[in-house]
Image 1: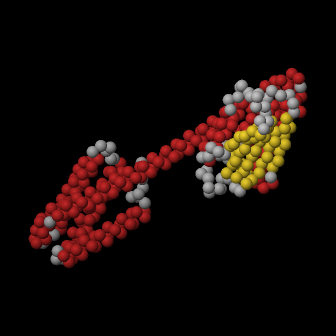
Image 2 (image 1 turned 90 degrees about the vertical axis):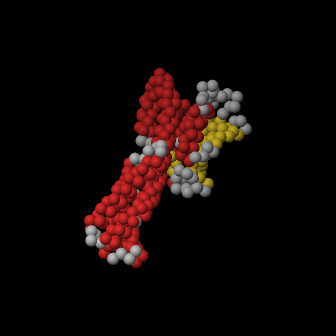
Length: 353
């Protein structure tokens, strides 16, 4: 437990100032109300309070390094009693040796022993209580910070896991297409391998925590679409519309590609006809909207689909923004499937990013 509350320069100066003021107050009290000579008053106050301050430091450090989980009150009481006894007897011995010839003062010192013991015990008990509470609060604060850090690490690990789980789906499909092209069109297979290598090389540099502009993301998507066009040849058409003001907006990397991949997969499933994937990007207020439309037949659904792609995107959105409604899907006349993605901006104070 790394706690430096008593070792900071500001705390030390404050404590020293309070100690000097308290020594002065005690000296004045002894001189005025107990009619002790000024020298005796100062020496008595100085010795007693310096020993008390030293005991407080010892007590605070002991509680810093060790506090039993059970019978804590009994432990602190015994510790305070021990330190109080040591301080009282040390003060008595030092004062008796310094003022041997002042019989009236020595008599008063002997009579005031119980009162002095009680005052020092209360002072040390208060110090023990404050120190114990202080360290408990500091420990709870550090435990809370460690818990948050662990949660952040877990979130980052899950984000990376989700991102890397999405890539094999695309990679397996691409490799199958490369294999088919090597038989019917070797030259196209070579082109696709080159584009696939460029795509994967760029993908390795991307990270969930790195925000990219829409312009950068669409360059990545266009490279992906170039691979898909090689796979599906003339059957796949892409229509992209991007509002000019949206180009400077940002989004976490690798969010759009799984949605486009999902649209291509279900748009081309069980059909030999040409299809058009429509991608629109625009801005409303502080939200970036990305909408992907693809034709589909509601009566012909893939039996192999697990729905992992969109569910993974929803989970990533929740981990990043704490909102499960940023990804929405709908159908138009049971012929067009619409996927809408909303991305809050990282400098928007209304989101918890």
